[in-house]
Structures are given as C-alpha cells and as structure tokens.
Amino acid sequence: MALSPRLEFRQAQSLTLTPQLMQSIRLLQLSHLELSTFVDEELLRNPLLEREDGAEPGEASDVPEPQGEVAAYEDTFERSERIGDAESIADGYDTAVENIFPEQGPSEGAAPVSRLDRNGSSEGGEAPDIDQYVASRPLLSDHLMAQANMILRTTADRLIARYLVDSLNEAGYLVADLDAIAEQLGAERADIEAVLEALQGCDPIGVFARSVPECLAIQLRDRDRLDPIMQALLDNLDLLAEHNMVGLMRAIGCDREDLLDMLAELRQLDPKPGLAFDSGPVESVVPDVFVRRGPDGAWQIELNSEVLPRVLVNRVYYASVTKKTRDTAEKSFLSDCLATANWLTKSLDQRAQTILKVAAEIVRQQDGFLVHGIAHLRPMTLRNVAETIDMHESTVSRVTSNKYIATPRGLFEMKYFFTTAIASSDGGSDHSAEAVRHRIRQLIDAEAADGVLSDDTIAAMLKKEQGIDVARRTVAKYREGMNIASSVIRRRQKKNLAQVD
Image (cartoon, rainbow, N blue to C red):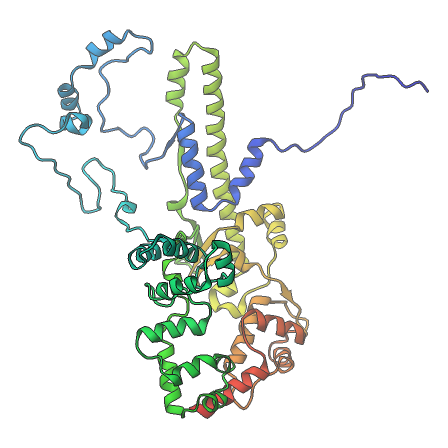
C-alpha cells in the first residue's frame, strides 16, 4: 500500500467549552464580593451595560428631556450655540450652577453647605461612602518601628531593629535565631541582645518574645508581678498544660490558694499580643439565601437581593449609536459589547436560579435539622442533590462554594450540610457524621470525674442508644478532630482539678 498525503472528510461529535461557557461556569463558584467586583469591571468595560437602580421600565424620569436631538456629526460651534450657558442649563434642571459645574464654585456670599437626609444621603441623591469614615488599622511592623526610632539612637541599632521586626510572626513572637541574625548582619550577639531587650518594652507588651513563658514573663515584669514563685510557675507550664495541679504545687512550693490566685493572674495576660494588629481584611459573612418558616408551616426560600448584582442592557443606546455609526470596526465593537452584555445578564439570572434550586433541595432534605437541631442532620452528598435536581455533581459543588444560607438555626455555609453517612446497626436510616460528632461531644461533656468514657465505651453507647454502628478508631478520629483529649488525659485532668478545688 502506497503512502501518500490525501484529504478526508470525517463527521464526529465533540463537547467544546467556549470561553463564554467557561466564564459562566466560573461565575457559579464566585462569592458575592468576587461577583460584585467582576460585574464592576464589566460595567467599566462595556458601555451597553448599566446597573438597575430600582426604577421600573418606562417609569418617568425627573431629568428634563433635551429640547432637540443633537446629531453625532453636527458642527461643534452649532452645538455650543444650542447648548446655552451654565445658568440656563442649571435653570433647566432647577438647581444651582455649582451642582452641575463644580469648577465654577458657589456664588459670592454663599457658603458651601452639604446636607444629609435621615438616611444619610446627600442632596445629590448619593449616600456617602462609609469606608471614608473607617479608621485604618496600623500594621504591627509600622507600629513597632515608630517606637524603635524613638528609643534607639544609632543607625546600626535601628537597622537591627528593622531586621528583628521583620522576623516576627503574626502572633508577635521572634522566630529567627539571634546567632543567625548576628551572622547575617555582621554584628555582635551582644548588640543584638541589647536591641532586643529594648524592643521588648514596646507596645504591645509581650512582643519579641521567643516562647510563651517569656511572653508572659515580659507582661508580668511590666506589671511588677514577676516574683520568684511566679517565675517558677512559668518554668513549669508543661505541668499546667497537663492539669497536674498537685505536681505543679509541689514543683513551685505553694499551696492551693496561692496557685489559684496566680492562675487567675495568668488568665489576664495575652499570650499572642501581635494578633491585635492583624492587618488582614475583615470580611463579614453575608447570607446568599434566607430560609424562613411561612404562615402555613412550610419553609420559604428567598435569595438575598442585596448581594445579587442587577444589570441591564441599554438597547436604546445601542440602537441610537449603531444608527449613527459608519465605521465597520465601531459596529463590530458594538456588536461584541451587545453579545457580552446579553451573556452576562443571562448568566447572572441562571446563577441565581441555580443557587435557589440547590438551596431548596438542601432545605427539603435537611428539614429535620431545621426543626429539631443538629442531632437530626441527615447525611447528604453532592451526588444525591445533583441527581435530584438533574444537574451535574461539579455544578452543585461550584454553587455551594463560598455561599451561605441563613436559617432559624443560624448562618451556615452550604458545604456544612454535606456530610458522610454512618450506617445504622438496626437497619434504620443512616446517621450524619456531624450528628455523631455532636453526640460524642455531649457524652464527653456529661461524664463525671470518676466515670471518664473511653473510646470503646463511647462506641458501645452510640450503638446501644441510637443504633450508630461506629468503630472505636472512628470515635478516636472524631474526638481528635474536635481537639478533645484522650480518656487517660481527661481522667488525670478531672482528678487534679478535683484535688485543687
């Protein structure tokens, strides 16, 4: 058979993700803040998009209509004659000249006045930006360097201080080794220690410590409360962490009353002073969906309209500009803008409907949780919801990411309701892993000092009381995930606490 190039026609089907389809999929997983930023960028980029201000279509506007239509290619001089001066324009809008042309300033004898109504809106109709009145939070590094520049005199010491400040973690602890710093800067260790000792007196008290006992000691020294017995307590914090109160009293040589007084004093200290200057953005959690009990007892599901960006396509402007546009490139640009605007409005509506559909299914399946609490939380997976509402599992995963739902039980992320199932030993319905964790915590909180429950005992009680077939290692995994100590440590803690009390 001879090998030679040739042309062949083949017919095949394939699924192709267009850029707009990929963008629509990406919109599903955006939070309301990210979506608002995306829409703002599109509004700046696309002249055919505008925000919906709440006015009904066709509603009469308070702005007076122009006296005549101005042609796009009309002579500039002729247009200027028809426009008129500033005073005539201001009279047509029934306002002052400075409100339309602020560069001209107010008239003589008139003082600039800004009045706000009851809602905080100005006379122009726009509310002041609340962010302009929020005080900025200083950075920990800037706060410390401002103090270091005042207490350190030489340039070399300030350079060392700058390096030490940059070596702090978010809690305010010095994580770099002094020998390494001295070698890096080519300085003596004694100079590094001298600068460090001076910086440890900066506000907030406790920064530049290298361990928790040193951080607490700095704060106690500032309060003039670092006596030898308190220092001995700081040297034996490991016994305090183990709740070995008897061994702690024996190690530091004090009685029960003195130990309780010192522990009360330690509770007033801040083991992580640097966190007060956390500069990360504080974002409030805003629900995307509200769930309320209706008058008939059924659940009412409503989208939060405050976080849904509403945009409109200005087709009147498109028709007006297209009619007067002669350049082919401009017509192509306007066509692309119209297609993008139509896609965005359709995608936003589809995103809202998808969120509402998924939320309705979550509420339907978790009715027991909404009525009775976490003990009745049902196991639910993405596949279960996807099959019920006839969507792909990945679509449900994207919809539930970074979305929150407000219920009578509180505000929860949608991902919270998706938990694994634990089989029932009596053949009944499966149990949610979150409900099992909640029951384990209840059993541990209710245990007595002389009746601490082991993981095997907890597993047996779950099987006997509620028919939850769970292994001991699963109980241990859930317990460790909730930061609950083992039965041995809990027994020792409760015993020592009983002896101290």
